[in-house]
Amino acid sequence: MKSKHVIIVGGGASGLVAAIAAARNGADVTIIEQKDRVGKKILSTGNGRCNLTNEYMKSECFRGDNTAIVPQVLKQFGYEETLTFFEELGLILKNRQGYIYPISDQASTVLDVLRMEIEHLSVNVVLEECVKDIKKTKKGFAVTTNQSTYFSDAVILAAGGKASPVLGSDGSGYGLAKQFGHTLSPVVPALVQLIGKGNYFKQISGVRTNATVNLYVNDAFVASDTGELQLTNYGISGIPVFQISRYAAKALYEKKRVIAVVDFLPTMTKEELNGFIQKRRESQSYKTAEDFFVGMFHKKLIGMFLKMARISPNQVVETISAKQWEQLLVLFKEFQVEIEGTNSFEQAQICAGGVRTTEVNPETMESIYADGFYLIGELLDIDGICGGYNLQWAWATGYIAGENAAKNVAKGM
Image (cartoon, rainbow, N blue to C red; front, side):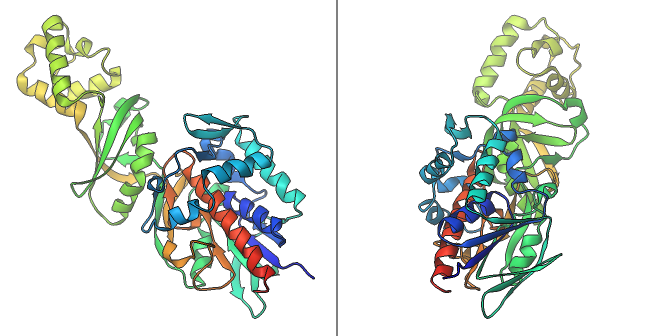
């Protein structure tokens, strides 16, 4: 009996795992990838080390317009299943405070074991062809690229989102999904730097400091995160900014006012900080304002704070007015940055938005509009926080779709 054929559009993280799952379940599999090799985006994950999942695997770590699909996916292919999958491929994994990496600390190792497995399973890989059209036929699907037309019994759309287009995610998958009636939640950059309004950023560019970043949209609090804040010549960056950036991007898309409020001393309450400074003033009132804050803040920050409070760096501490001290406390604990944009999709690690999750079967990842058509990975309106969650989503949705596509075509879909 002739094997049924599954075509996977996109050879990224989700597509490679989908190919493995489908081939293991008896399907004849073809991956069509528009770049010159598969898995390019995997190589850039985890700063080149590939944080491939996380021990703390909860639905709350994922965002989207409708996240009800997340627990249904994770119960089928979650943290433990991911560990088993990669260990069986030959990876030795290490746990770094819950973050899981290959012991080699090289993302290339993860890609290598995936590539070796698809070769072992005789998966056909077509490179440097871009899928332009997918049509449902009486016998299955016709997938047309810029060079040829391929026929299959099932199609898994794993074309990615719009983040990092140089690595293959150029948004082309959205148009292919729309051909089958799918609709999109607006797609915006996520896990991305935020552009601030103001002329002081060049003064503090390059500073890294622990901080809490609170995000407000139209004066309503929406998100917060704490970690190493990176100040740039255009705005704010670093993990805490990445974690809240999807909310900022969505709000900016909707033309709403976005404010990031930075607490530069998150380990102290405002009252504790006030008491600390009062005690410090009693013993160091003879110092200049600039010298007084050495040991508390980076020198670039000290200069900015003093300028904003209209205090001369050479002003003696005992001459600083109560109003100026009050203004400094606000700057330290509630520094407001008006956000006027995000960096582009080229700089974003992922994107928020995509094909609405209510339009796929959470048990199989199959389209509700077309039997045998599956949608997976970043193409869907689910994005995770930093820490291995976006790759977990890719592995999980890929494996579920691959397994079910093979089973369904084996039944003679």
